[in-house]
Amino acid sequence: MDVLRIAGDALWILALSLMATASRAAWRRIAPGASTPVLTSRAGRVLWRAPRGLALSITPTIAFVAGIALLLTAGQASGWSDAAIIAFGLRATLAPLFAVAHLTWLDRAMAVMAREGALKP
Picture 1 (cartoon, rainbow, N blue to C red):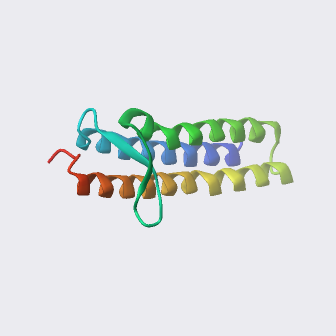
Picture 2 (tube, rainbow, N blue to C red):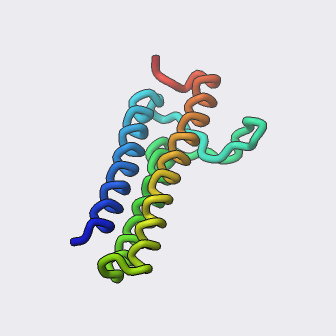
C-alpha cells in the first residue's frame, strides 16, 4: 500500500465516523415516530420529511458509496502517478465536504424540530 491510498482511507474513515457520531446523537434526541425534515427552503419551510432512520442515513450512505467508488478508482493508480495524486485530491476534498454538508443539514433539521417541539429534552 502506498501513502496516498492510506491517507485517503483515513480521511474517509474520519468523515464517515463524524457523520455517524452526529447522526447517533441526533437519533437519541429525536422523538420516536417524529418525521425529520430532509429538505428545507431557504426561508426555513420544510419541503420533504422522512422517518428519522432514513433521514439520518441519507448523506452518510451517499458518502459511503462515493468513497467506495473513489477507493476503487484510486486502487487502479499506482505510486505517485498523476492519476494517484488526482484520486487522492478528490478523496481529500470530497470527504470533508460530505461531512460538512451532513453537519450543516443536521443543524438545520434539529433547529426546525426544536421549534416544532419534536426533540426530547
